Length: 201
Image (tube, rainbow, N blue to C red; front, side):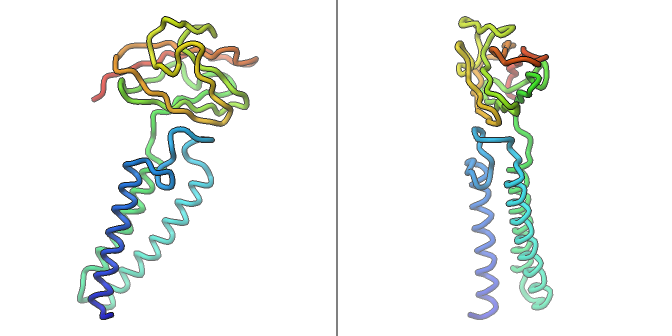
């Protein structure tokens, strides 16, 4: 195989890798983007380690492509391939570190008194506490079966295991919905939360 074919193959391989990683990010493939429902927070030490290893390999490959371009000084395809390696790193970093609409429940109760999410979109409930909790529409630990809001949080509520996160689909209507923790145990100082459903921009 001559140098021209090698450089073309290198460019094609890098292009296909960008398409695969980009499609994986958009489709929410687990090895690219952490799923909404799983154990632990979105960014875990294991995922960080995997990202750093992938980034190191891609940087090394990009440097080799850059060195090849510098050495041959005839074909720009190795340089383009090196640029595509940077694009892959950017996609992986975005998929892992881009903020998501996550509402956290801690040992003391809800992490904040209020939370906003897009109507018709979704939010992720993450229980970082040491015990299972039940979240429902209501006030002061009492579920309100007639309260409007996300269907998954209607009475008797949604059980959220310790150190787990669960996706909750938001209704298409806008407004304010009151959430409460049912029998969360002692030490809880923030039992209720006001969920704002805002119109999509």
